[in-house]
Length: 221
Image (cartoon, rainbow, N blue to C red; front, side, top):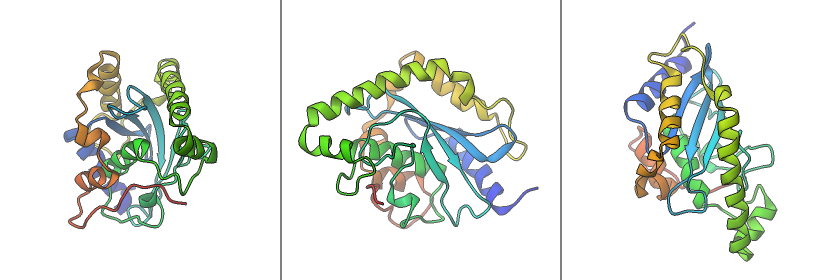
């Protein structure tokens, strides 16, 4: 059954295939366009560089009027990420707009990695280290970056949609597979600074179809 939310998600998916933002990738899971899996590469010139982080996005029939539930599947150490992978990000909460799409969500999260809001922490220990002991914070981040490589290789098949969702056009797994091939060949280095390490506001603004200004991607409870 095709609904407004599913039609919108099909458009989001088509956009990600035809004009993918640098360093992010996403696709619906098998036979369910409301459940997505995504990959974010750590932004260049940041402690998260070279990381390959998996996420899940759960949409409802109220999308795009309400945001999806987004979580990191990969282990994450970040001031604005809870222990269960939930993300404390303003555009996923009180500053959500129906104009934001999947590309905007993923690029905002990518920007948040290097632009945390330690004043509104989801992980108080990470926030404290970020503010008081940046060297130790970056050491902890490097550990989860290295762990992301191991987990990505071991569970690669788990994140790959087996079949194209009936509602979506194109091959859902193709984009994820292309990103994996790029990562393994080191092509992930082609992320530009604007797409990878710019502010959350600029990243989400470029991905969203809205004419209004994109809000900052700072974390918020």
